[in-house]
Length: 274
Image (cartoon, rainbow, N blue to C red; front, top):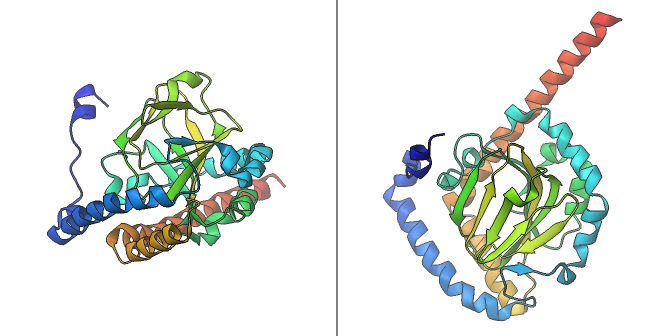
């Protein structure tokens, strides 16, 4: 990709240019900004860009079993071409995900387990099922040399966690900025951040970066939990939720078909050598 292409603003897909969708997005942003201050006051953990793991004891099993999780994603990566790019699942992400540079293998989407994908990573799925109020979880696969531009998450009612699995040797060149804090991934280490703070990612290496990314509800007082649940339920009626959910099912079908073809080819090779 040339430097001119990198600085050129990507065009929105036709479906994202529809007036109604643009209005929903505009007023949705206003609502989330108003909710943010309330949810912040209701929070039982610090309202900081990066939050100490001490507040989340359920993270410990992920670091204890990270090598098994890494082994599971390595098997999944054998069918790399069947893993969708982020914007293929969620067209609203077209500004930050271009080409095949950021692939996502989803295990949980909007609180729902993707049953067939989850079978590809049973240990990872078991650990994720122990996370209180899990919302989403996926293996995030970032291509060498790719930069995810600065952006913000939707709601302060959800926190995000990253577990390092396959990290480039030049670790300092593969990093995330959350507000004014820089985090560098390490294999087997996990951290939590609030993605409503502006954040961006660089992989300035010639190696792929793979992490387990998952979102869960921010620990809050009763009123905060009520507001967050209401907001997330309303989101389910929008295209922001409905479109990715439909796309997830399609790509789950494609990945399962790809693994079946690979298994069938292995059987043929095996039969040929008997």
